Structure formats: C-alpha cells, structure tokens
Length: 419
Image (cartoon, rainbow, N blue to C red; front, side, top):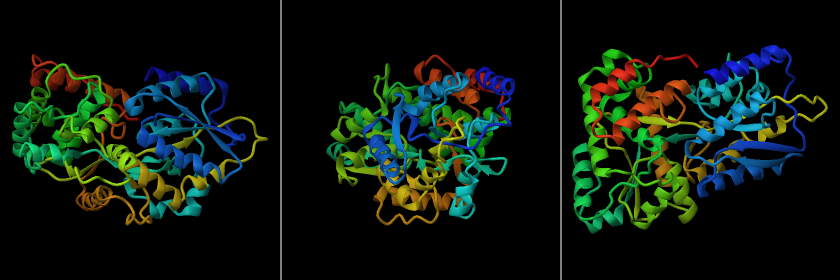
C-alpha cells in the first residue's frame, strides 16, 4: 500500500495522471515478465514471433521467480523511478490498480475492432477493464485445482487414481510407506498455499471459499467447514514431511515425469512443461481434478499491459496489440502454455486431452457459478491481503505446533482492502 501511495503521489505531483499521451513504441519494445521455465519460454517464443509481423522487435526482460513476485516488485520500483517498460505481464486486481494510477494504455480501439465485449468470458472481461475501458489483453485461463499423476508409479505400487479425499490420503500414505516421496512439492510459499486453496474450495465449495478466504468473514472462518479444511491441510503437511526441499515448481514437474514422485498438485502451467518435453501428454502422465467434495474451477489469467511513454513522435503500438490478441496467436500460445484461450471463439480441437477437459470443466463451472479466481495467484484479492493470508497459511503448514484456532484469529484480524 505504501508503494501504491508513493506511485500516486509521484503522478499527481507531476500532473501526469490527466495528461499522459497515448501509447507510442520505439522500434524496440521492452517486455518485463516472469516466464523463465522451459514451457514458459516456449510460450514467450510465440509472443516474439508475433512481433515479426510488426515494425517493432521485442526485447525480453525476464525476472526469475515462481509466481512473479520479484517481477512485480521490480515493476513497481521502475514505475516510481519513471522508467516503466513498454509492456508487462500482469494478473488480476493489479491491472485496475495500475490503471487507476494512470500508467496503462486504453485498448478500446482494438477491443472494439475484435469484439472483445462479445468474445471474452464475463469474469475475464471484467478483470481486464478499468471504468469500462479495456487496459489489458487477456491471453489465457489457467486451472489451478489440478492433480498431476505419474501413473507408472501408482501402478508399480498398486495404488488407484484417487477419486475422493479418503482414497487420496490412503494412496499417499501407502506410497510413503513403500519408500516413495509421494508429492512433488517445494518450499515456496505460493506452492503450499495453492494446495490449501484447492482443499478449501474442494471442501466448502465456491460460496464458502469466497466468504472465508476472500471476504475473510468471521462467521465462515469460525465454521466447522474451516476446521475440516485445516485438518486436511495438516494431513498433507505430515505426509509431505519437513523440511520441504527448495524445489521450483518446474523442477517438480520434471521430477514427476521421471517417477521421483507420484503426484503434483498445481496449475496447468505444469502441462506447459510436460508438452515441452513430450509434445503431447505421455501415457504415464495423467491429469485429474483435485479430489473434492464440491466440483468447480479455480482459475487465474495472464494478461499483457502497455505503459504510457512520453515521446509523441514514436509510431503507434496498436499494431502490436492487434497481433497479440488475434485468435491465431492465442491458440498457439495456449497450445504451448498448457492453458485454454481467454476468448470464446477459438476452437480447442488441436489442444491436448487435459486442455480439452479443462475447457469442458470451465464451461460447466461457469453455468453453476463455480468458476472462482485464485487467491494465491493474484486474482481474487489485493496483494497486501494475499500476502498476509498466505503467510499465516504457510506458517501453519510448516509448523505442527501452530493451531487452527490461532490462524483463524489472525486471519480475522486482516483488513480487507478494495484494490
């Protein structure tokens, strides 16, 4: 919040909030992002290829760090210093926050030409607008409540693919007793809290999930449902053991494919890594929704934003916006990223079986009102609330002496802010 206020003060003091010109690009366009894994670099190559169709060229500026926390911090400080990139990767409420501060370019011209109002899903449309104006290009929809499985490891130890929580715990414990490390899970806070998110959504469903962990409603947090969620979270922490390895998520995917682990609970960015190595989902790898009492779809979405620059003599960059929002571009990017397209008009016939299942489950979840933005992946809440909640959940997972009641009290003390 202090950073945001500093940014706002900088803009107001200089009078730029109302006087910034439209976007203008030099020949070289700097792109700040956090896509550094093998699968992500494949998706990045699609963005680079799209620039070949324009007068501009892309200069990639990758900031290493799973989940993008380091990249987001770098972006904030560069903006305060008056040196933002031309283009950046962004997610969720942060888009509106940057737009409110006057940094982002209005993309309504291209949005109208390409009929984004009609072609975008309503949740995705709202994320990428500020005051009814489009300020970001939505590229994809990632599903977070996935379970990635090495079927060869299960078959070797006569473990069935879990269909519910009880069979999941039984399978994990059976594998651990056989000397197998059942879960590919690193010590990153976001990896652990994403697991909690899947459990909470699976136990209580979308309404509970929003009430308890987005709105931080004391009644929901003090419920028997929350007790069950924390019990399940503790079960997983005891099976995973302590300390967890310093394993990046993409290293976890590779370990899963090798057979070092039987399961990984993470989003379908894992599929991007699998497709990089195999071009299709290999027979020994399976995907299934995370075992839940309630069905639904937890999502995040990657977007591209464009920062205003101050040389009016430069040519317009709207040709870049058009290329990076075309159906052809979006299909190829999602093919490599493991996600599904953010536009309704893009056929998914050529995508992998896991992506087709994700697409079908997303449609069902939309109809039931069970498509919910992720908390841990920057989609549902203000970053300050996200970090405060995540810190408490990480501490609970990492320390068996921390009691659920203590965490609930701390969560109720977090003030929910409007992005």
